[in-house]
Amino acid sequence: METSSTALLEARHIGKRFGGLTALSGVSLSIHRGEIYGLIGPNGAGKTTLFNVITGVYAADEGTFLFDGLTLTGLKPHRVVEQGIARTFQNIRLFANMTALENVMVGRHLRSHAGAIGAIFRGPRTRAEEAAIHRRAHELLEYVGIARHAHALAKNLAYGDQRRLEIARALATEPKLLALDEPAAGMNATETVALRALLEKIRTDGITLLLIEHDVKLVMGLCHRVAVLDYGKKIAEGAPAQVQRDPAVIQAYLGGALP
Amino acid sequence: MRLDNSLSSVHQRRSRAWIAIAAIGCVLVVLPFVLASVGTAWVRITNLAILFAILSLGLNVVVGFAGLLDLGYIAFYGVGAYVYALLASPHFGLHLPFWITLPLGAAVACIFGILLGAPTLKLRGDYLAIVTLGFGEIVRIFLNNLSQPVNITNGPQGVTLIDPIRLDGLIFNRTDTLAGLAFNGPMKYYYLLLLLLIGVMLVNVRLQDSRLGRAWVAIREDELAAQSMGINTRNVKLLAFAMGASFGGIAGGMFSAMQGFISPESFVLVESINVLAMVVLGGMGNVWGVVAGALLLSFVPEVLRDIVSPVQQAIFGRLIVDPEVIRMLLFGLALVLMMLYRPAGLWPSRTRKREFAEAAHD
Image (cartoon, rainbow over all chains, first blue to last red; front, side):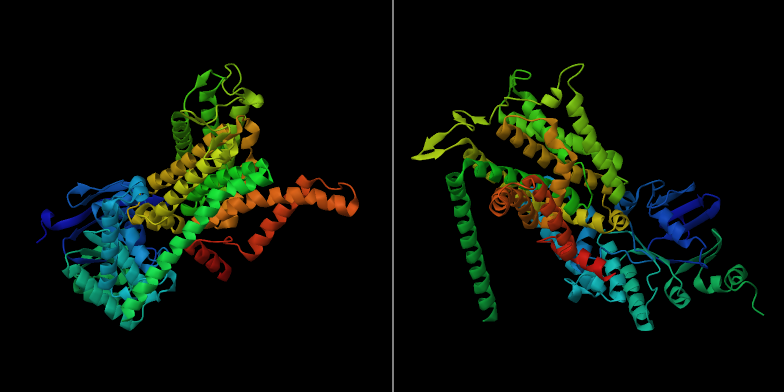
């Protein structure tokens, strides 16, 4: 199974410092095509930093990324998305004053072409593209189950629906890897169950998922493999059940072995 | 049945819109004759108002759509005006036709827009405002001082005897008679400016509702999220600067042609603020609002100028306060009241209105 051709994203010895603080050091991991990969760890372990490094928000101080056979190191966020890694944010970052539909339409920016000239003259090609953007955005809203709110402002959506909208917007960029930063944060039990079903569906449709999550139950039930970060280092990796029993992980989470 | 109803109501609305457009069109065509009967000065005032509307629409792309606060916008107007003036006046002995000088002015202004945009990409809000303000002043000071060692701009004296727009036999600063109607210079410019304004409005409307327009709004709302959606924020912002500057350049060229004389004094900071006030007052991001704001802020002071002196004469028997002072006083008061009661502008855009409503709730 673990051959290089199955790896979609491969991180090698990633290091990131903020001044004197080492946020990540020597983190290596590989995410396989078609799996749901979980990234867990206590608060401040460096999960979101790793996320930001992968998506180009921060530049890594050390290490390299290989994504789908290409090296991604040092690319700006908009280039990373172009390569096929889309993300959501821990603290939802929708375009609050645009409608749900418009939010997803922005996600199509990358996969459409009309420029200023096209916009001004609005020829048949631009109009066709605009119609296609509209259609696709609607489909995606339908896909994540919030099509009935298409014309509601993003900021007026219920919390769980905002999370779904972020996912739809990310899917609009046609990613190979969808990176979700705590998608279940703040959701109640019912919403989490529904989210889980959505994530399973996305995976079945051929998109690999990377997931930072605090909800251990969700991670254990959903992810095929899990990596645990603590103080910027990877302390464990493997199947959820196996990681759960790892002494280093128990040490990190509970500060000592169970009696 | 219901579908039929809604269809026919759409038709009705559409035909009503066409009637309205036709009516407004007739008024606009006849307007210069009405104004000229009051005084040619009023045609000139209208022309300047339209020019400022074009200018405001240019700034609207930068401030209203992309949310980049630009306090040096008048510099692009100045660049366009000087390009036209220097290439079509006795100053260098060049007399190029307007269809070269106007687009060239827009192109040079566009380059200046990119020059301003490139180093300021990472700045936002107040910081961007300060840098753009400085840029505007730099351009003005250059225009003022580029008379030595080589005389390029003719310094504070400005450029005189600038060619009017000329199309074969049709010379714009002369009176022509057509079908028994006398068209004087300002009236001809009025029609030309009106066409230009309609064009610029159309461009604004189309940009607003396009892939690019959405990208601008996305950047305004959340730049990091916009980047994460694959928007190349650098290019898209530069495009906003460049397009806004080009409109400014065209307006500047028209200004040169109309006035026949320009000097650096026309491109001072107050003018930048004036244009920004038009955009903000009218309603950032909304094309109709911006045009309304520009027309209002152009006409009201002129009307006041005509009212203030006679009223003082009537009450006190002499002039106590200079009309210019009262004009600025009322202008300031109007802006303060606006900001208090309609912070999103007279006629705000959909999204802008929401943004302001949200700020008020916070």
